[in-house]
Amino acid sequence: MTTPIRAFFVPVLAALSVIPLAVSCSANDGEVSGAARNVILISIDTLRPDHLGCYGYERATSPALDVIAEQGALFEQCTSSAPWTLPGHATMLTGLYPSTHGVKDHDRTLGDDTPSLATLLKESGFRTMAVVNSHNIADPRYGLGQGFDEFKYVNELEEIPGKTNPKGDPAFGIANRGPGITRQGLRLIEQHKDQPFFLFLHYYDVHTDFTPAPKYKRMFVDPYDGRLTGNTQELVGYRVRGDEITEDDARYLRQMYDAEIRQLDDILSGFFAYLDDRGLSENTLVVITSDHGEEYGEHGGVLHGRSQYQELLAIPLILRGPGVPAGARFTDPVSLVDVVPTILKMVGVRTDHEFDGVDLTLAWLNPDELGKPRYLFGEADHNNWIEANGKRAKYADVAWMVRVKNDKLHYNEILNSYELYNLAEDPFEQVDLAASRPERLELLRSALKAYIRNEGSGVRIEPPDEEEQEKLKQLGY
Image (cartoon, rainbow, N blue to C red):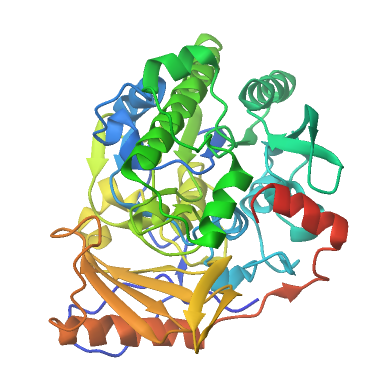
């Protein structure tokens, strides 16, 4: 593991050189009033903030999440560190960028010297528990379960009766497991609510395959006579072949996505009601976020994992609990790397370990500090089909991103190309400013080059075997 050097604030537009500053969770000297006794971290895989009411979406996809946002604090501009599940969750659970924790693909694992949030909380007397809904998180090969007293995996795949794959073997689909995840989470809370606990809940329901119940499909999905169903393998085929996604296709996928979000939101409504009824809301910090978003044709494709555009990197971040100001909204850009140091601060756990993220209680205790320009990074793409040197090939970990305030730079190693956008002027990243703003391009390029130079390699493990690869393939990887 490399030493964290990623979380640094930019000297005010003065120099082009980069001076990294490691940040520990004790960086914020302010005190949080009424530290939380318990922590619940909820990860809703593949959730875009622009499809939630509390982030301005006009459809009624998220009434329960909207209430939590009203009762707590919402960060309007939170960026993930990677556009797919494994590296994103490794960041969520360590407070480190993929270049620091090293888990960029299925041939890397978290090292024993990489402390996780669960490890640090367990050492401080918390009962640490997780219920997860993805092989990418649950497989012990990747090390994301370290530090948990109880770590339960609810398999996201289910056999489709009467269907087989091209080899004649049973066909599997990705099922909605939200009710089961929630039941197991409630059971764990009931068993251990008499002591401080940390519960990590991971939901895969809004990820493809899209299989909303008829009630929710009627609420959100208009008639559609196109070819798509929202099946993961179907969309992988579209992506590999480079098929065009029409506006009707994209609309249908977005609406199916909305139906899945609302279906899960209704499940979470019952979970939050349980916390209220048991009096746990008064002393429990609830953190709601995601690992990445989803593309619906914004830059010519579907699914996720390939690029660093906003439809994939923008994620929600909502906090509610003791010490969190109710109804607060913060506009400074923040990152998924900030989740761990923020949680540790909110429960009063101090550590000498350093993180790439910062403690976001700065937002209300020292907003001038959080408001300073700060570099945020994205990396660890995969399944990227690129035409280069006369041939089309699949690449991984070649697309990088660095952002400071509203300026965002993309870099592709294979094509040696740069794209520069200003998100305030162009939130959908359609107008490339690389040629017209050379000084900003050079500032961000210098920061990104320094970041890449300090990239670590992580702890290598054997690549997935044939059986493992087949399972990953069913999940779209």
